[in-house]
Amino acid sequence: MKKLSKYLFLGIFSLALLSCGKKDEPKKPQNPTTGQEEPKKPENPQQGQQGQQGQEGQEKPQEEKPVITPLDFVSEFAVNKAGDGFVENHSIPKTSDLESKKCLVGFFTWDEAASNENKPVVAGVLGAKELFAEGKPLAKDWFLPNQSQWQSIFPYYKGAKIDFKRITYLDENVAEEAQIGLDESTKAIYSSDYDAVEEPEASNKFVVYAHRFKNTDWSSAWRYSWDEAKKSVKVECVALKGKSETIATIKTAEFFTKNKAVTRYFPCYGQIYNRANGNTDINLSGEKGYYWCQTSNFGIDVRAYVVLVNDKEAELNDEECHYGFPVRPFKKKI
Image 1: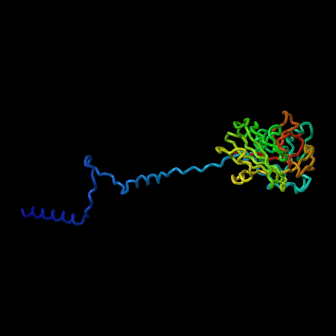
Image 2: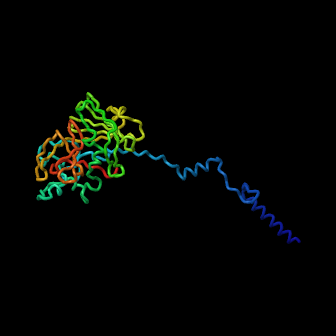
Image 3: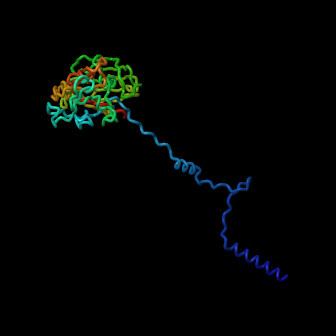
């Protein structure tokens, strides 16, 4: 009996030591139905949700893409003499000889192969269409625009006309065919309004304004003016998609300055007669400017369409393919 009491005493003493060395822990709440421990809740009921949203990340507002205008497709400068890049400014060469080091801009026949089909090829003469053949330096990102694509910039002379000398002008709802860039789905007959305004500060007295491609995604305001200092036609364009502007509300220089218009200059580089036979004499420099289109006139390789600019007008016309004219390609993608 004494032996049993001894063992009981030792057992009770051991339990007392264990209970003294162990800290009291708060009891975890249990679900009265299941008897299992309930998950710990956040002190702030919204804290868990906010933390979860922070981890997953909220959708960032998408930045609005700049609205593209037809003028955005046009190269800022003309193709250089080597046909592998662009000149760096709009300066008109102070020389009448294409071979001079002072002349950096290129003068190309329309299509060297086509215009000289029955004649020997003259060394060093390049055709505008050849510049964009597969494998050429410019072919990756640029193309030679056709007539409809150029008409998205300048109207055809048989339709509306950019006339810097005309006093009575307003032409409304002019039907003009055009294509924007390479997207053939944009080729259509568009409605446009043109008007001229006498502006004392203008180099040539009158400035032509236009609301082109009305009631379409390409609706845009245009300003055509002559820059005497640069001997160039200056073209400015502002996208009007979703705006309620009219020809009456856009025909001020301030409108284009305020809306940060896209701007391109078209210098009067002149021309080279019979460039196909190797002639290098530049004529009409500072007086007239010509830029090739890809489209031949009447479907024959004798005459092709060109952009013509000078201090009196800006339009699409046609010229003989043997001439040497500069090239202003369009971007394939923007």
